[in-house]
Structure formats: C-alpha cells, structure tokens
Image 1: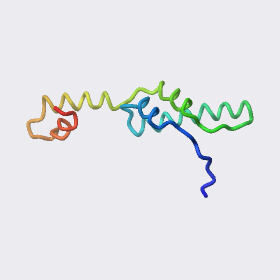
Image 2: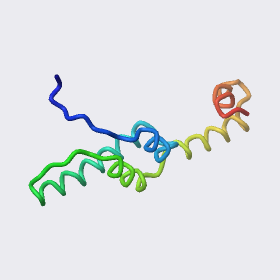
Image 3: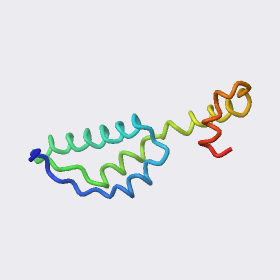
Image 4: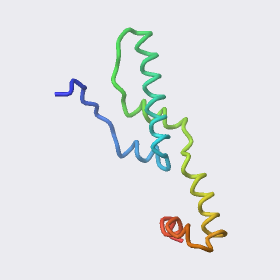
Length: 95
C-alpha cells in the first residue's frame, strides 16, 4: 500500500479544461492547485486533498502553450517545407 489517499477526480472534465496544454502546462496547473491547497491548510491547520474544482480553477489561469507552437510550426510547414522536414506536422494537422 502506497499510503496515498484515493482521489476521485473527473479526468474527462479536466482533459476538456486543459485541451491544448503541454506536459509542462499540466505540471503548472497541478503546482498552482497544490500551492493554493497548502495556503488554505496553513490557515486552517487541516490539509485537504485536491479536487476536480481545484484543478479546474488552476487550469483556467493557464494559457495552453502548444497552440502558439503549432501555429508557428504550421507556418513553417506550409511556407518552408522544401526538404520535407515538416511533413509530419502537416500530417498531424491534417493538411
């Protein structure tokens, strides 16, 4: 047994709220939610587990970083792909 409490999260809902987020973006969401929970625990003296609401609230303040990257990659793939280096991007973007 790992000693960790089971956390009941709505993963489908959180996936929708974090659409377009990279792994680093998701780490930031978790870090922000944990920081807020720690602040609350320091005030009350009672630690509480993370909830779907905590993570969704944190996610609302994080701008997904992949959209800008894909926009730039799309432009390169369309306009500078003479040697085929960006064919996989075009395929992924279904272009």
